[in-house]
Amino acid sequence: MKVLLVTLLAFGSIALAAEAPKSVKVDLSNPGPYFTGEGSDPVNSNCTACHSAEMVLAQPALSKAVWQSEVTKMMKVYKASVDEQDIPAIVEYLAKVRGNGS
Amino acid sequence: MKIMGNMMSSLDRRLFLRQAGMLGLAASLPKFAHAQQTIDLGLPGGNGIRTLTQAGEFPQKSGDLILQRTRAPLLETPMSVFDEGVFTPNDKFYVRWHWADIPDSVDAEAFRLTVRGHVGKPLSLSLKELMALPRVEMAAVNQCSGNSRGFFAPRVPGGEWGHGAMGNAKWTGVRLKDVLDRAGVTAGAVQVRFNGLDQPTSQDGPDFMKSLGIDHARDGEVMIAYAMNGKPLPLLNGFPLRLIVPGWYATYWVKMLSDIEVLDRPDENFWMKTAYQIPDRPFATMKPGEQNVPTVPISKMLPRSFVTNIPADSKIAVGAPVKARGIAFGGDCGVKEVSFSTDDGQSWRSAKLGADEGKYGFRRWEAEFVLPERGAHTIKVRCTNAAGESQPDQPNWNGSGYMRSVIEAVAVEAV
Image 1: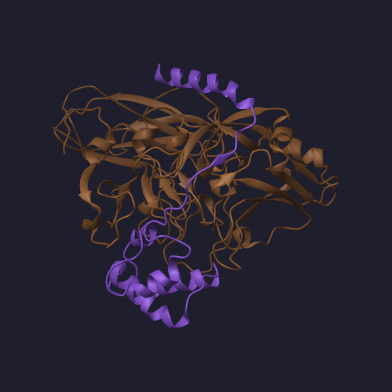
Image 2 (image 1 turned 30 degrees about the vertical axis):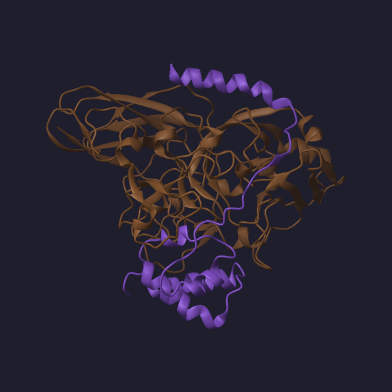
């Protein structure tokens, strides 16, 4: 019954779709959270031009070598503008907050 | 909070109030945060707690979406939404962007879709011109290549999604074939490349583009959609135009589609040649640590099914009839059968299927059951698609966390 109702609603509203869509303006200005705590400065200054912190902090516990490869990937593949001198500190921070001890 | 009985919102049980600052991961308080609601995705090895969005936090989106990342936006649809019906509402439909440079406005009059390259007559189509072409509509599942990555064991880096990086919508638009025919594809065309309005946020970063083979592009099923569930697409889902590639993973469903280029050679751009590669094996599976596995670009989806009304660790009354329900999809073809088990897959019976809204969409299933004895039970659901392919007993695995397909299990306790 519920499936039927949903179906009818979906078909019913399709009829409205023929008009050209109106212009849209939205707000995408929220930068989202930054990295915090000891050692976070180089991470914020090198990483958050492209992305906020959440997905990084949601990673499973990863080895330092994997974190190193993630930073390398951001630079080599995605052309992130990372200061070479900051790389060890960035990897250190990531291995501290989301490391597996190896 | 524990809820007795058999019918409950998964959110009710899993939500709890928690200060964002208590996550222990030192996320600074975002703009909207005071006390934030969170959800536990139950990922193996932990770190599965995510904040839920508040209404208005993301444009044209409801609250209570699972916040994976604010910028570039990654929003997940909670399983409870899939319990409400087979079509996923636009304001609850998941969101995934690679680059954060997304236009925050689109002028519907000025917008043009260009078609160029190996064609007789390059086109620059306004939305009105595009919409004058024959209109088609189709229900189709859009699923991220990495949906359910958080359940990979061993875990892999990437977007740590639960099962909600997917949605099903009724797409309205035009056939890509009709657009290509109007431009007149010339002899020697090999692939068709699609680009959207989003841009890299780093200098020289690879612009996100995807390509389809010329025959696939002209199969009459691949669409350019201007509406989703009867309404213009939310900007974060690709307003004003999105490529619809039924049966294929969402990486090909280019959002804010603005440019189509017919190529006379295989596309070697990063997003086709290097990214989104899978082991060239059935179910894209390999062993952790295995070396030199041949790869191919990801393509067709695999069958999947989910219980949507019984969250993990639910308590169910012994001896009482309970109705389980959920959704299934065949991948690149329809659903032939959904099977249901309450004894960890030792015995199976057919679930009752809901209305067929189209072979590429979600299909509702229902099954009534009784748990005769107290204690732990494992509920399982299995989809077999029209090609005879079923979700496997053992999970597939690859280092990118793509294409999860396995019989999903729900642990419950009869009390």
